[in-house]
Image (cartoon, rainbow, N blue to C red; front, side):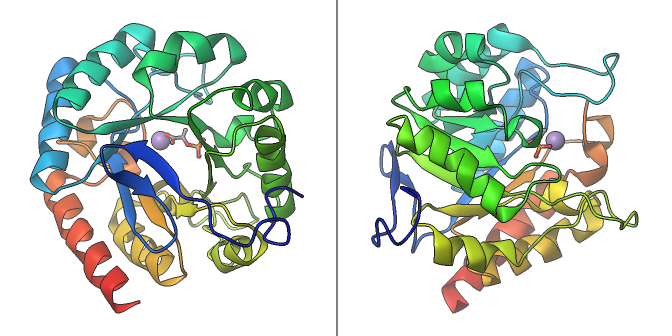
Length: 265
Ligand code: PEP
Ligand code: MN
C-alpha cells in the first residue's frame, strides 16, 4: 500500500503554510467547537486560540447529526464568515466535508478537509478528495478497523493527494459507560504501519468533558502527532456535543499540559 511504511519510510509532513505543520516530531493542537454557531462564537474561539498560540481551529458547518431535527450547521455562509475571521488572525481551518458536491464550494475557505467517522468509507467522497490539492484528515469509522482506516487513506493517496492525516476518534464497542472507546492502541500501530501523521480526538473518543484532558494526554504519550478536541466559551450552551466540550479555562490548562507532556515524551 502507498500509505504504508514499507512503501515510504520517511514520515509525511503536512505543510499548511505560514509555518503551520502537522508532522512527526511536532505536536499539532486543533481546538474549537463541534459546530460553528455565530460570528460572536467564532470570534471568542479565535481569540482563545490566539491567546494560547494555537494555529488550527476545528468546527463543523455541515454537521452529520443522528437526528434530522438537530442543528445541522450554518453551511457555506458560516464557513465564509469563519474563514475571514480566522485567517485574519493567522488561524487555519479544519472542517468536515460531507459530500462530493461540497468539495469545490468549500475549497477557498478550507485548510484541512475533515472526513467524518460516518463518511470514513464513503468511497466516492474519498475518490474526489484524492484529486484535490489540499490536506485531508480521515477519521476512523464508528465501527472501523485500523486496516479499514488505512484502506480509506489509500483511496485518497492513490488518487494523487498525499496530504493526508489519520485520526483516531474512538470506536463503538459493547461498553456504554462512555460514548465511544478511544482506541489508544491504534496510535502506535498506525504510526508503525504508515508514514502518515496520526492525531487523536479525545472528545468524541470518550464523550465526557471531565475525562477529555486525561485521554488527550494519554494520546500524547501514545505517540500521536496531534490532538483535536472540542472547546466553546459556554459548553452548556453549545448547539452540539456540549457534554464533551471544554470551556476556555479547561482548554487553556489542557494546552499547557499537552505541551509539557510532549516535551517529556
Ligand atoms: C466532529 O468532529 O464533530 C464529528 C462529527 O466527528 P466524528 O465524525 O468523529 O463523529
Ligand atoms: Mn462533535
